[in-house]
Length: 68
Picture 1 (cartoon, rainbow, N blue to C red):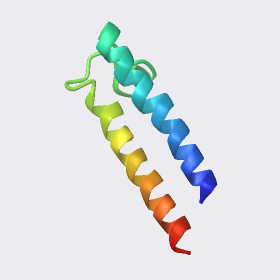
Picture 2: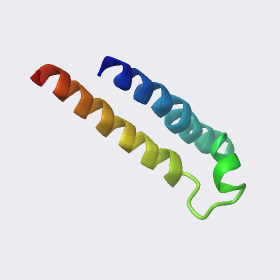
Picture 3: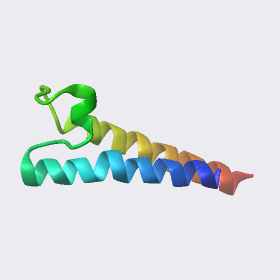
Picture 4: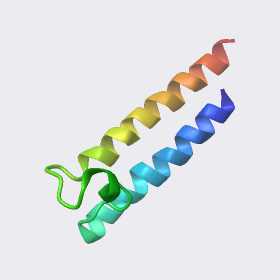
């Protein structure tokens, strides 16, 4: 389970936090441009959703690890 937490945390930072910060500074979403194009309707939504999913995965993995 620790590996799942590490992978989720890494993906959350690379595909969630960094693109959101980049969007705030430059208006672009970094690596997400390759997936959703240059001008999606809500460019900040993709990294934000991934960040929320990542947080849920990390919390669930941590609780499972502590439970047994």
